[in-house]
Image (cartoon, rainbow, N blue to C red; front, top):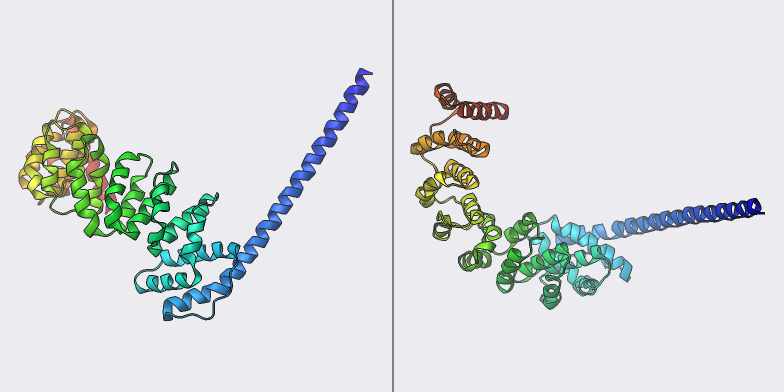
Length: 349
């Protein structure tokens, strides 16, 4: 009897497994059919709408617009975004006019509450491109979302709609949201109106506490803030926190900062010495050769490397001079790092 019970249990288990396998295969087939059907529908829709987009861009007019259902609107919105982001100037203006006739802005606002993250991203991008002020409160709410991509894109859309209204709030969030990638932040600020961004960024650098400056200072370079010596001089004081000093040296490009940078090559922290050596490559003069040669014997490899690379950027210094420095140096570290930089220069030719 026990063996008969085990046999019966095994038989039932086999039937259950077979049923699950058949069910799984059926689900895969249905999913495949659904995907193929959707792909064909998207292809038909693209075939119908691509000539409309093309004529609207080239001539500012279009043939009669076909009626669209809700599911088709999402596909057209995706097509519209692809066109818009690949164009510039008057072509974008004509696409915005076409979007008004299709009522894409109203549809995008409804998509902001979608459970599909991809649809919400499309909606945020579209509302920013369309300058849709009626979506301001919704975008402001999304700017505080836990999802870093949604919140960052919402901030970017607000900058597109009205940079004057939003820039101070966006800069404050940049310092607070460490999950916002700085590369994406840089792209969004680079596309925003400089007339609004530059004064707000200068003001933020002046007023922000030291802990927030390492995320703000790189943006001075992104939005091309010229004449930043007045902002950076106080931040290049030797008693500033290490992170602030390093961040300020990375964006130090004003010749007025050269005397201050020279004083930092003797800083006790090696990251500061390394960035000071790097800054001398941008700002330095022939008189700085002696300073950089001394750094070739620093105990930290990165300081030696930055000093050697900066030497090659100084006026009147080339590979021949570096070879001479290596031949006449009594320090093994200096000879090694100069040899490496010479090899890199040769490989780059």
